[in-house]
Image 1 (cartoon, rainbow, N blue to C red):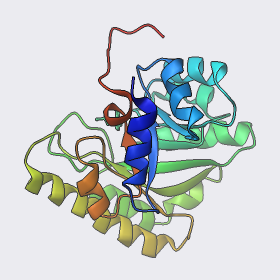
Image 2 (image 1 turned 45 degrees about the horizontal axis):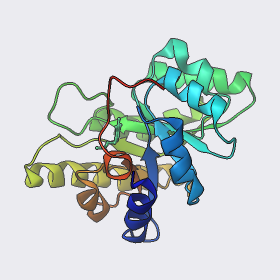
Image 3 (image 1 turned 90 degrees about the vertical axis):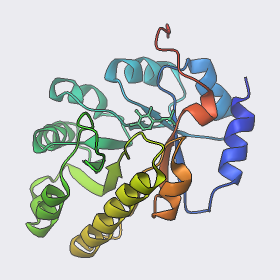
Length: 224
Ligand SMILES: *Cc1c(COP(=O)(O)O)cnc(C)c1O
């Protein structure tokens, strides 16, 4: 296991304004503690059940990021403690996060997920929907939510021109929204994974979600 070495080498290679969500889904708590032991505190999970198990058994100063698709009926379980929700992909999800946040007296940081990939399966708002959201000042309707930026996933492809194009398009949208929104807290562009993070950084990505490069391959038949 080279988790510490992998993580340190990765962090040392990044520009100072770029942060990493150590994407620990499917990996055991021991692996998370290895990364924790060298000072890392930001971890990402994409399943509510798995996040709850890990949250309950690991140190409370970990900042948990939710990076997957959220089912509305599970939102109340993570809202009390989650640091950032990356995958907000519908107004329904936004409504429910807001409702639960107000119930527990929190303002929850969220990113709007934008559909930039060619693949049908990726969730998210369209570019037009995001523009409309900001132009109409719809964010004012959610006092329990602070919109911190945008999140996107490029097409899983070896076609670098395509990945470049997709990241450039979300960066353009990010800059436009930032201007309209005018809130300095709107400062996060969550793009880039193990295979494409160098391209993401070139297009303004400042929060990378990286799993495989830190923890190795995932075993989906795992037991926590
Ligand atoms: C798993 C996952 C990642 C990390 O992928 P790697 O290729 O292992 O770095 C990033 N983003 C999301 C949304 C994920 O589910």
